[in-house]
Image 1: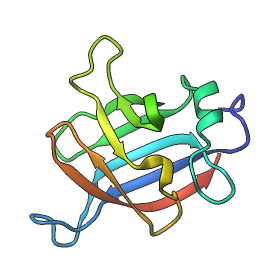
Image 2: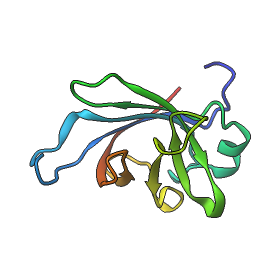
Image 3: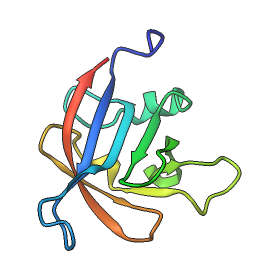
Amino acid sequence: MHDLPKSFVHIRLELAREIGHPIGDTEHGYDILAPLLPDGFIDGDLATKNKDKCRVRRFRPDEEDAIGKLLRGPGGRWIIDYDDAKSDDDEAGFRFGQEKFVLGEYVSIKEDDGEMHTFVVISVDQL
């Protein structure tokens, strides 16, 4: 990780409270490696230049971790791509380009079940 630009951080997201999870779920979430601007927004230009380094690990109880890439697509849309050969496993980061990734903020991801789930930013750590 010593070859990453200085603005790359480790972001931890955990499922926020929702129906079926009244206190959220610390065992369902994402670890994201991506560059952030000083104000907490994803640095889209730097992420695009370093797309192979923008990594994601999805974790859920009783499932093997899924490893993928965070990619900026057309129109600034952000996706999590788990397999380059197919797109039916991709997940969409809802408005990731307009969301701040700072402690306590909420972001949404349309997961592989087709449902939108909200996650809270638990930590943002410099590498």
